[in-house]
Image (tube, rainbow, N blue to C red; front, top):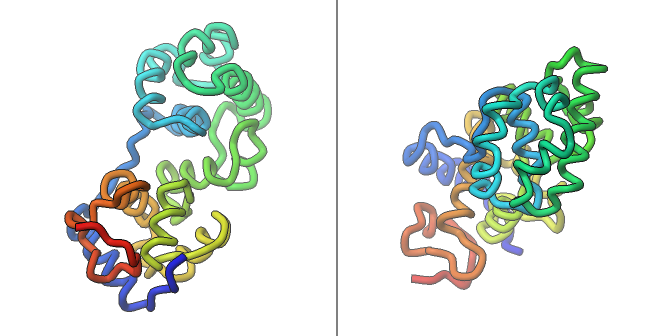
Length: 214
């Protein structure tokens, strides 16, 4: 774990991220808040690309909780069987769709507590939805962000909750909205797990990682 970078260094890091990509986007395909919830729930222990491949046809016929319930668990399973843990995920999607209809009028709620009350929706999933759909500065810490936060010194922490708080505390307010997307994309394409691409890194001169590759 690297030491915590100072505020001005972190501000410069995010200034560079912003300059390179002012409006970073999440890579999970969705057409509304409901399909985003479903896509993120399906993405646990799966790749965004794999989820997108499975959901393109699914969301054409089931883009609301009511339509998903009409499709049913077996119908849903047929669409997502290429995704890991698909049987349990199908059960969760049907259950969360029923709860949305029964308790929320078919609408996706905009509070973290309400989102986390849905089956298969944990804090990370809730934060993705709050950030991407409701434009709240919520920080969803996945494996990429955890790695980048600890490697660079932007947000070191022994678990995802500590890293999440560090991002909220250390990243300047003007960069909070897009912080998690910049960090995810950086971890996915540059600061990769096994052999980080330090030669192509925008922030290599500011990063605390000692085993840089060039």
